[in-house]
Image 1 (spheres, helix red, strand yellow):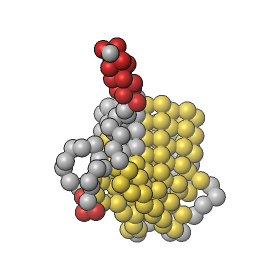
Image 2 (image 1 turned 180 degrees about the vertical axis):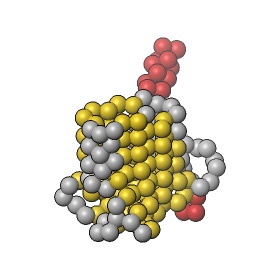
Image 3 (image 1 turned 120 degrees about the vertical axis):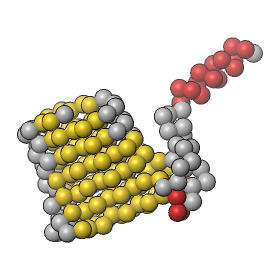
Image 4 (image 1 turned 60 degrees about the vertical axis):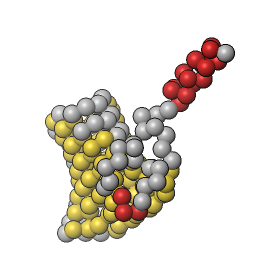
Length: 171
């Protein structure tokens, strides 16, 4: 019986991810036409993000998965708005319960936009960007693929992987 308990404990710890498998509270989608935009600024708190540059679109599309047990509507902020030639995506948990609440983001955007990312915690994947990419990251891994407009990274914790990056690179 003791061996069965040990195996169950190992199986459970292996299947639990960093975010403690919080329940999915809701999914939301946001979009914004980019006719007059040159830059997108992403300001994210806890959560993973995947960003994909697309040469065939003129719209920023965001799919957000909000995780947190008993998280109320006023305990997170999620917005995408235009200010001049800049789009601003804001995704943060506003309450301080520290129960591993998070907002995971999947973002599709025109590949030629300038991308600025400020991220507190979580992994970042960015692929197929032709505009410059700037990342200010506190914690989490960064995976980059096919970046051709230059790259600047300020990273305090986590691994960085870059494949096919062209232009000036500052880390």
